[in-house]
Length: 557
Image (cartoon, rainbow, N blue to C red; front, side, top):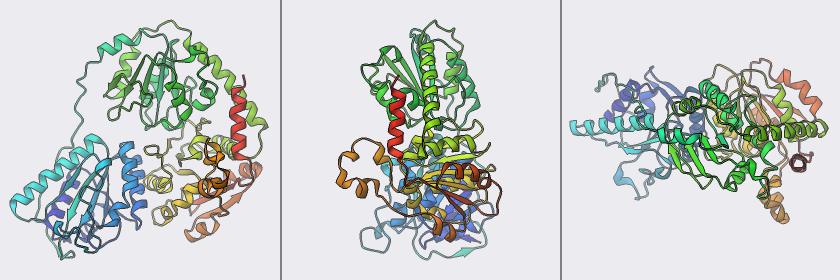
């Protein structure tokens, strides 16, 4: 059975022709034609998730894993507004989400008809394209809708980001038919145009500098990129800095940026550490310390290498290199090496800071920092790590994690609102198990992430519960307003996840010391017939003080 709406039949056939068949549907009446059509057609894999905010983040996680577009579909009105946080995140991560919002007819807007809002261009500030279909069944309307849908899907692939199609529906909404009135031949997927840029002037300029830094931000694992950067990192004049979310692994890289940068952010520091040329690759950088360091470094040039974004993060961007990083780095790797003491300077610095890191942790007491050290050592091979924002990802940056584990975090807009939903969406389509490392505020904020039937038994949640948003005890500023700190910044609480785990059928365990954590982790990661949650209670630990002491210890040479 199919919807009788011709616009829906056309959309459905074109999605299938373009290889898009995963549909996340949130319940409603106005989107009934879409729901009927997709759920009755076995070519589509449909998921039902009630909360639109959670549904959109779930789709984002699926798209992270599958590296292909995922459709989200909702009814009209405020339902569409609840998609917005995930759309923003997808926009800055370049995650391809196709957003289908059902709508009332255009003449119903602003006449106080139920669930009717101005949703035609609702996402216009954070969308790569916004389109509207017509309800007409005449040949002209069908042709116009065909052209609109084709343009929208082409944009979806070319921009690798969210695209919005708003679809007005007049009643009746539930009429069915046994046959399709639309027949679309299979369409070729759009492709990126091949690189036609001539970067020879930059290649020639590269070796004119004796101090070069390559800084890599958030991106998917890429073995070829990893190998090229390793080759460049062996040079005397080049160092390569990476983050956990870069998914790059090598002893040649500086993979714990804050560990090495914390003592270099003072303007009076030896300027020999400052690069002349900065080459950045990928997206959002977590470390605030490296941003401060580079903004104070008097860079001569900053080149950014990316197919989509070219942010002037360090206020000195000189070249926007819009190409596949592999193509450009191969040309750099072909160049002869240049004599320099830059790499040796940084390597000696790295050795000192690594020793101090190990020494501090050897003698440190139970805290979030110590917990992350244990997790770094104990998470098994081939687990996908999803890390929530705020303090969890900052602690994770101080450790290396297993080279066989991929790491993801919603650093597009860096919000806490959908980390759990994203992780579950990711886990639902992964062959390897997934573990979410999350803080308590982010976890409790996104409880509806657990309200679906698609959580695999291999999914694990590690909840680091320090009793509030401890990030506000760590960063400078909020601690100066002592009367507001606990209630309005940290938002202290005494909640735990025991009853939530029972409600959503998760195996639950709470621990409150390092020995107990080390003993329980093998059990936690063992196979089971249910997902599991491990709550690590650090409410009585001096988490913020220990982290500040850690950085003070590193900074004292």
